[in-house]
Length: 106
Image (cartoon, rainbow, N blue to C red; front, side, top):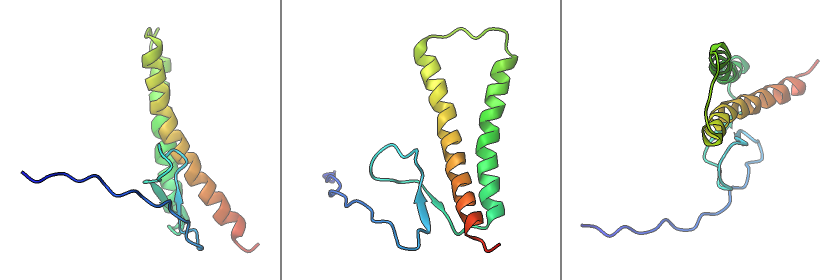
């Protein structure tokens, strides 16, 4: 059986000057693994943001339609985390869209 070797230490990523790939703010460590391609067409970026925001809206609307939801603080914390991740991702994509729109000539 082969011996597993630990990964070598990583070097912090230095952003490329053209800022093509923007790390999501929701990365769970200082070594980002999830990025937004800022050069994607605006309609594709908007669809990605829309998808994430509407997914959270659907979950929250379903929760509102229930009578009473009884659960402990751990479940509420997990539920909040479940909502925060796609909301933050969607807002990051909207930030990219805003930057691109502001950079366009009038």
